[in-house]
Amino acid sequence: MDEVITRIRTALDRLVDEGTIPAWSAAVEIDAQVATAAGGAADERTIFPVASLSKAVAAVLALQLVDSGELGLDDPISRWLPEFAEPMVLRERGSALDDVVAATRPITVRHLLTMTSGVGLPSGGSSVMQAMAEQGLMPPDVDASLDADRFVERLATLPLNHQPGEGWCYHHSTDLLTVLLTRLTGNGIGDLVQQRVADPLGLTSWGFWAPAARLAVSHHVDEGRLEPDEPLRGASPPAFPSLSSGLVSTARDQLTFWAALGRDDARLGDPSLLRELRSNQLTADQVASAGYFLDDGDGWGFQVAVATGDRPGRWRAGRFGWSGGTGGQAASDPGTGITGVVLTARAMDDASSHPAFEPFWDAVHGDSQSAGQASPLPTT
Image 1 (cartoon, rainbow, N blue to C red):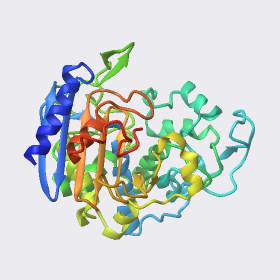
Image 2: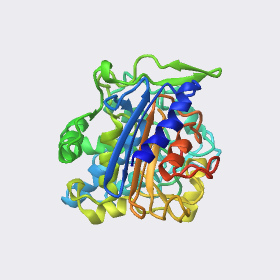
Image 3: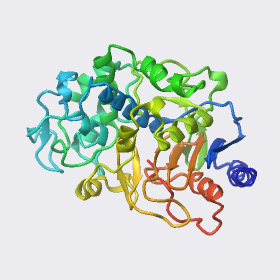
Image 4: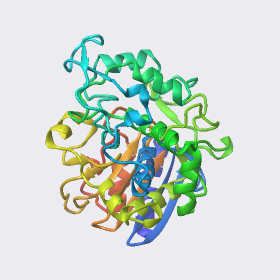
């Protein structure tokens, strides 16, 4: 493990020295041995906004309720989200916002978990996606004044991009799943995350916000320069704490969570349901509709990407994980016994790249010959 951490430090500190990233924190588990490191304007206690790495937590909470019998995977979501009782759907992929037909089937919990609900961001865009931007529903520029109910109400005024179950759209299904969980249980999402995930796993630096003194300052690239985001992301409780992108965490706490998923840890729920979470749930046509959101050879489970084939020397089929727009990535590979997390304070360049991800995984695997090859996770 000392050699692994040395390689990680060398690779990521080089990016700091070059001015490519301002900070990083990483954690790795290999065959049950754990090591952590950090660099730049961060130490191992620094808390980062993890953006879409939050999504897998929503799946865990939902499956816990499935296990207890309070929720069914094929239950219509309108039972808890009546705003979506009678959704309309774009007539065709390129239809105008008012060229719609009625949904032919209800949106179900399974559709939300697999992001096949028709709600969200389609690969290649649509009139719905443009309307989301105009109405303050597009990440990362979501209208910060919207609470959960107003967010759902506004989202429900827009048609679905496709009939439920007939395609794949990113992100907003997790917002709806978050609200469903709170309405079903009568508890705030922060309480659910704390009681059902953080406490059982012993996560101490994890939540929807943290003191500014412990937070990494997120940056974006503007005309080739790193510029800090304003206001400081994660420094105060959000009006709508959503598991689509809302959590903040240390790399070590992220590692604990993703490694537990990889081991089907019963502290997170029924192991058979956790295995379902990290198994591909999509048909070939649904995978194709995801476009650039999923890398070649990847499918989608419940809120995580899943490798459907081996990459020799790198991972085996069944590796799962995801990336976050604030520059974090996590993966767990039960086949090799490797789980890794890297958090940075630089936003994704676009929907498919981040300068720290490939060097991190090269360092984890000791693979000096794989530079420039595909990242071990989709980078969105």
